[in-house]
Structures are given as structure tokens and as C-alpha cells.
Amino acid sequence: MNTTSPELVNFHQTPAQGTFGVIAPKDMAEILDPSDPSVYEVDYVAGYEGITFLDVERKCFLPPPDLLLDCGSEPHPAQMNWNIPTIAEDDAKEAFIQYVTRKRCYNKTPAREMVITDLQPLNTYRYRFETFTESRSASWKSEPYWGEVIDSPQNGAAPLPWAIRVDVPDMFKNKTVAIKVPHTSSVTGCPVCQCSGRKTCTLCWGQKTVPCLVCPRRRYNLFTNQTCTLCAGRRIINCEICHGQGTTACRNCGGKAQLLSYIEVQVEWKNNVFEYAANQRSGFPTELFQGVNGNTLFVNEQNMVYPVLGFPESAINQVSRTAIEQHQTQFASTTRILRQRQTIELVFISKVEYEWNGKSYSYYVYGNEHKVYADDYPRKCCYNFPIPIP
Ligand SMILES: [Zn+2]
Ligand SMILES: [Zn+2]
Ligand SMILES: [Zn+2]
Image (cartoon, rainbow, N blue to C red; front, side, top):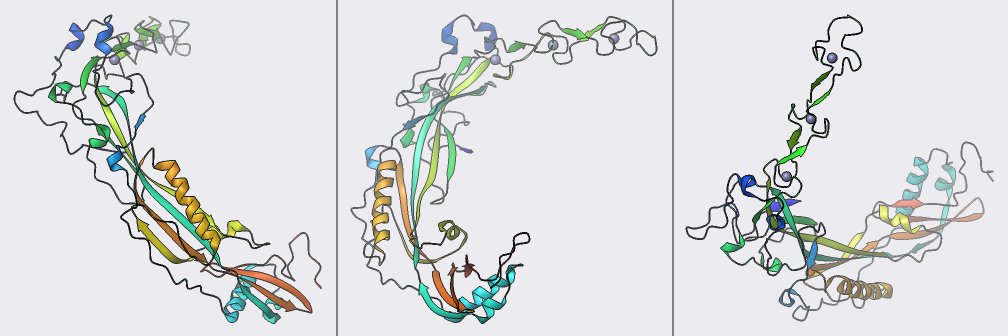
């Protein structure tokens, strides 16, 4: 996650004369009353209602209506002439021979001698629909306070979550940035150490000493019979963790007793993907499509896209409508939709029927890589279970 400063205000710059925020006194711990609950409270910030200081959950803020898009002004994509490629018989045979050659226990004779009786192009389409969204959430953050000038609510009203300007990164790529909201900082007492900056040491539990490691039960070293040099016969040594103080610096406030608290807005850009592969080929495993590339037939990118119309395979038109409706329901009311893109790819597949030795068999050639799937190859064997060769 990146942390960026918003364009509105540079956080660490010194405010103009006369507009200074709260500057906490250097040794606030001495004047804070740890029993007063108000020293742990942060300021109420208008526009960020619903987030509480103790809540670790982020609260999502919906985009205002003027940031929501509609596709009314976008032109409808022109009607396409869909051009569907096929494979030649020679290529299908060559792919088959290559496939059998790579299989160590397949006899190559059937692949070389077989005669193709039928070649059926079975066009399979992959439809991909992407919706690139932005969402914003906020939560309180705190960190040790080092005495720097802070940008408090006295400097002005905090900008609303969606009024903070952030540059949109590359489209269709996931990214998250965190932003300190201007004018929301304040200094509070650390509730973990009750404004003392110190915590009881967890090794000696405040005793300042621990038993000697060398002679826990006797004053003399067992082997040399000399007085123990580590503890000088005292059988205890100073605690190494707290250096004999009994307390250590509070980790929550870095020993400073005070915390700088502010509201952090998290901006998340996400590419939401819907994917569909049309496969009605009995005998061909659908998951094999995932491992191959196809030819891109159609790409349509707009603020909001229209469903595909008139594609030769009607399932794609239907799936496009469903995907767009689904993303509209899922994202339009909770996020800001920045861009949409739909792609149709042809994942090429052909079923090849062939004869060898008087019997009929078949195999599939698929993907730009011309991969082969042959479930009923006539002469294959495994090491332990040989299949009878006709
Ligand atoms: Zn503390
Ligand atoms: Zn200790
Ligand atoms: Zn000792």
C-alpha cells in the first residue's frame, strides 16, 4: 500500500502565520491527567460520522451522485463482421504427430498412418468483462507523537472523503493508496500506558532483577567452585530487557506518552473480472481452455459499455447482458465505476475424426498453440498397466 499526500494540503508544511493548529507541549505527559477520560478523546469530524476511534474496521463511504456514470452519451459499438478462422487438415495432422512424439509411451505408427475422415471446427468463445472501480473508506489512525506541528480542525473543515483529489492510476490495474485527511489531526494521551510512556517490563515484571543464569541455585560455579563472576555470588542479575529499571518504553506511543491521531482515507482501485467460456463439446474438458491463448475478435472499452449484439453465437450476447447487469447491481451503488471493457476471444478448437487399422477414433486440436487432446489414442500403454494393442 502506498501512502500519498493529497493535493489539497501538504501535511508537513508549516501553516501560514495566524492559522496554526494545536501545538502540543513537549512534555505533555507531565500535565496530562491519566484519570481524565477526555485526554484520550479525538475531535468530532463532520463528514466522517460513523467511524469511531476504537473501531479497527474501515467504514466505506459511497460516492456522491454526481460522480456516478451513465452510458447515455456513449455511442453504441458498430455492428461487427465476425470473421472466424479454421484449421487446415495438414496442420491438424502435424499437431497430432507432434503430440504423440512428446508422449514417451505412445506408439507413433497410428498418428503417421491414420486417415482423416472428418474435421469439424468447433468455435469456442471466451467472453471477458471488466469493471474498473474506485472505492473509499476511512478509519482513525494513531502513531507516536514527536512534537511536530499538526494540522488540526482549527485550520478548517476536513474535506469529505470523495472531495480529496487523487490521481487515478493505470486503468484496469489494482492499487490502493492511503491518505491523511487534512485538518483532522489531534494529540491525545496514550491509553495503553496511561500517559506515562512506560510499561511494566515483561521479563522481570517490575522487579528490576532476574535470577542469575549461571548459578540459579548456588553461589558457586559448579565446575570451578569459584564465586560466580556473573552475579558475584548475589544469585540475581540486573534485568537485561529494562536495564534494571523495571519498565520499558510503551510501544504504542514509542515512549512519548502522546499519540498523533488523524483520519486516514483509503482509496482502492479494483479491476473486477467476469469470465465465461462457451463449451458444449461433450468429451472435451473445459479446464483445458484456461491453458491456451485465443484470437481477440472484439474489444470494446467505454465509461460504461453496452451489451454485445448480433454475435453469431447467441450465448455470448446473453452472457454479455447478464455480466453487465450483474456488475451494475454489484458495483454501481457501492463504488464509483471508472471504466468498463469487454473482450471476445476465439479459442480455436477442432474435432478431428480419423481411421486407423479399420477402426474410427477422434482427437481435438485447440488454442493458438495447437495443443492436442486425444482420449482414445489406439496405441498407448502405461508402465504398469499395458493396454492391449489391437
Ligand atoms: Zn503509551
Ligand atoms: Zn526488566
Ligand atoms: Zn551467578
